[in-house]
Image 1 (cartoon, rainbow, N blue to C red):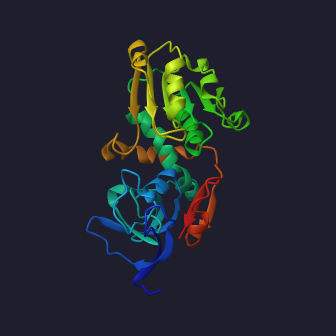
Image 2: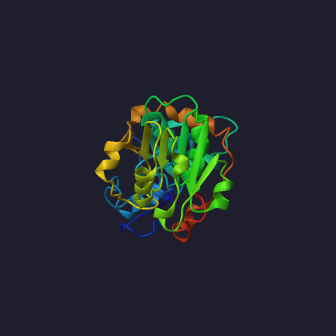
Image 3: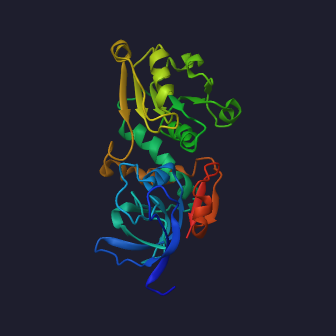
Length: 307
């Protein structure tokens, strides 16, 4: 490999696993800084964009990786950077100055690489997609045993939740997440008793589909509810009868890039990074980027690639 080339993982056909290959080292623009990438997580959104079916999927050839940790070549300092919709799965990445933040001392870079993106989903849902939440609000996290759901429980507490209710199919796993109350999904969704959610102020939904329809339709909410759709682990569509919206005080929003602006997100990133000082240490599996084809479809572990 010459000084003008580097290794990267590249998608050459939508839906196929990225290939580890050599590519030219790009020259930075005037507002960019070269960063030597240390690690970048394999998130759900990364796979989704690489499938070609995500709204952010662009043109081929495509280098995945929406964020990561690296060393800024100008001063060798560790930074967290955002590269959405892609680009982090390579050895050196040119990053706009406004899209990077120095990593605070004492924080594990691999934890941030693996979980900053999931944290961002619930953090921005609460900070940018809700309004006038009461003090010590009650939140229902639907899909609380997913990677994003687990950290959403902690994010909610950091941002002022007094009570967190978790929803999942697995009672044993859910009991380990640290919620105050549990709703266990029945194999037949319509048989699930969701009455424990009657007094929630906000719903963070990583499931969607028929589960969301069941919750919104069957729970007799006792206060105004702000429902925020974040993920679709249980389905991408739901059929919600109109009478549900007419008979209950429900505000429905979504959270994701596009529903909030980069300007709204930018001041939150340092706060998110500092919050890692209080978050539980989560399991991550660090693997060489050269093994990306072997680990691309691994959904049982939290993968962090190291170029």
